[in-house]
Image 1 (cartoon, rainbow, N blue to C red):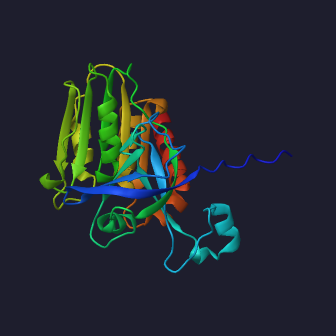
Image 2 (cartoon, rainbow, N blue to C red; image 1 turned 135 degrees about the horizontal axis):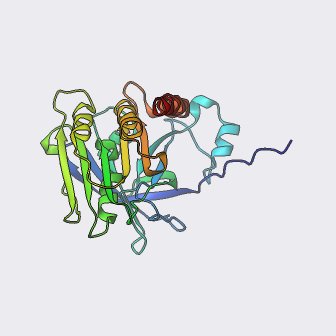
Image 3 (cartoon, rainbow, N blue to C red; image 1 turned 120 degrees about the vertical axis):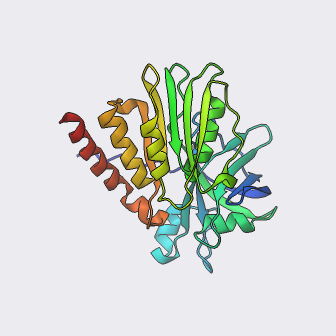
Length: 281
């Protein structure tokens, strides 16, 4: 029996913080530079990197090698990783922009971004990615929460001037809205969560949208439970082919990224199976 091919590891980069900016009360922009020789992005608008945060008191091998870490250190000393979208990559300046959602001391990456200062170093691997808006699509539907906003913003900026698109972004309140650069045919709707459950306003708005003529290309990302509901709506009720959908949960209520990533593949397969059964029925 032939051995299964090994998963190719992405290169690891050590960058330094150049500057930071608080875009909204809960969104912080960090611009990284230096040590980015060989990094490239731009094929996809949902490019992402895996940020690597060492455990306190742990010395990692130099140069960083995840395989060596797993061989030489006990599991409780392995660094934690967090996935973040590439908001912008400037190859001429060698600058990588990443936007972080920050909710006080909660989590790992948000507090790091809030305290980041010029010169601070950050390890990351990547990029990954799979989606970019198709300029030939009849129209585009993009929907997500704060975690998907960087990818949605990057996609909107990539749309051709004659594009037709409906964009729905759910945020905590009006203070979290951002100015997005978009062609004239793009309608951007900001939804304020306020005290409602995450995704409730977003699901309602997408369901209420009168679909334009033609088949859309769709991008729906964010909290896994509302993503599941919208995936069912789009696949089963709207009968949109899977190949035209980029739909996935970036995170899940009640689980940190470690727990969510460990269960995400199984969860997605279960959801896909349930919804394909619904499509067939």
